[in-house]
Image (tube, rainbow, N blue to C red):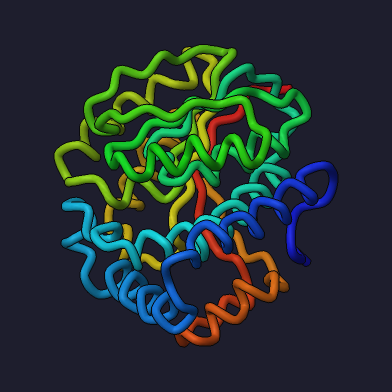
Length: 261
């Protein structure tokens, strides 16, 4: 069962980060305002997905705060659990390229979970997300830097010393950019690159998933569906309850390329 944070040295870092998030994002918002923003953000993800590619998930201060204070910690916990379950924490990479990094939570989670403590290079199109990711790396004491770039047109430097992470990012790409990314990932195993793609488990949010599974598993990838029982920290539990959400478990799907150990 996943409790407030992962085991090991990441635990204290996660707790301190969560406290800092609360101070940072509740400085100008009341708890009821944040709860309303979380409802609106959740609606955007589930019912108004056409707005995601246009940045609709982060188009107000309230939604940005809700994402940073609620979804980012959930992504941290889920990514950490997946990395450990896959054994990706034992892969000796020097750098994690967190493509579509958002606030940096997923890349930082992998870096803190990994035995080799790699650095993180975050990439996101949204300038607020880039700023927040750099703050996240600093608060979690992760060696990393996020920069602004378009995930759909980046030229990725792949190789055995790098891992490529796409966490909750591919589903927000326009169709053309998503299609252009798939051949890049097909070539990753031949270049020795570790790849981890994480997406929500709900199939209606990722209609492209079966094609990606077919193409990438043919190239040597593995697909998994994850359900981790979870006891959330009190802050996240209170926010979830107020917004009508019930994350009693952390769920996700993944496609991964891991080198043979």
